[in-house]
Amino acid sequence: MKKNIILLTVSFLGMIITILLSNLLNGVSSTLILTAAAIASLVLKIVFFAIAIYTLVNTFKIKGGWGIKIFKFLNWVYVLFLTLMFVFMIYIAAKLAVDNYNYHNTRALEIIPDTAVKAKINPLVDYNGLSKDFILSLRSGNIDSNFAKMLDYSPNESVWEKMEDKGAWFALDKSVCFDNRTDCRRKAKGVSAMSRIINNPMILIAPVMIATYHLDEKLPVCSDEGLRLVPKGLYLDVVNNKIIVIYKGTKALTKCNYLQLSGLNARDVGYEWAKVNRKQNIEFPYPENISKKVYQFKDAIVGGSFCEDDKKPGVKCNVLYPVDDKVVFRVTSYPANIEFKIWDKKPVSGHQESELKFEIRFVE
Image 1: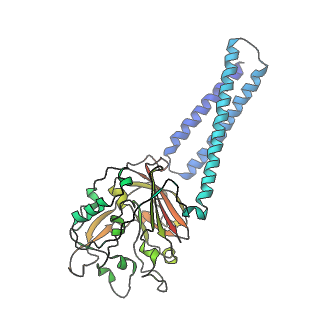
Image 2: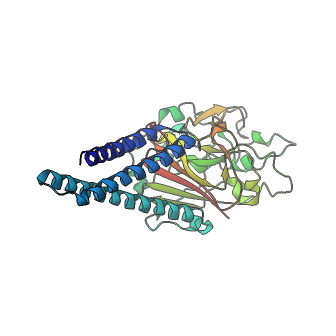
Image 3: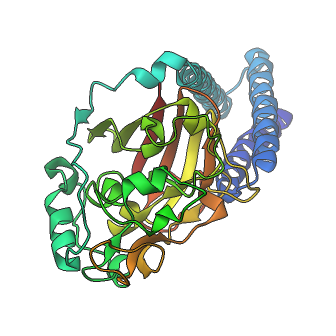
């Protein structure tokens, strides 16, 4: 009987230690270490479960007083608990497998959850010559009422403090239609490229074009809908704390190696920490990137000298800053998507549950 008591104690303590170590390893960012730890944890759990079964079988033949009866009862309860735990683990594994299959099912990206509500995409605006206060008041007025309930919004001064008041803004047409023969960047006439983001605060993380001059001249660059990166669908899922934005995917977009993620809106509303939760047909070319580690957005609008207002030569142009390799990406094929976890405070690791999720989809 003494042997059974020792074995059951070893099993119980071993199981507790295994669970505690698993929780401690949640802070580790290395995928290799986490995988090895998960395998080792599963093996140890099976071993300790086998010990519990062994002690239970051994006690069938033992007869005695109330002490032995209590031990048998505790052994039964413990084995039953472990059995339920393993059933739950199998259920979670099966659910993850099904979710993973659905995620990589190409038709899944065309399905919007029943809990999501379609939100308004505000039109692009010509910001040239408009005051900083007017642009920010216009922005505040464009926050969806459902989204407003999720946060207490006031502009983040560090995002806007270097904006040029009544400055010029890079035109959307010129941000797409580069011409190597002329410096067409010095044109600010027309709707502003940044109004895609600034005028739509719910688009927390947005794809932006760094450059298109490397694209094949045979591609319809200037008229390509995909390269304009104007969203075609925006959905707010308050039940699951998630936002989905859909963009048109085109051949030219897959040829573009100079796309970057902008977290301007995320930073402005207080969610400046993010990490890619999962992705499909998306490539991050640089070794250190937002898909590997938790990333802090530093996006801001600053007055530069990259463009001019045709009406007011010499006026500084407001541009997005900085350019960062860690958020540079490319679309390899369709459908493609990136789902992010977003936090208002720096998480312990990228595995920590987030307050909000944001998904970008590219669909042909």
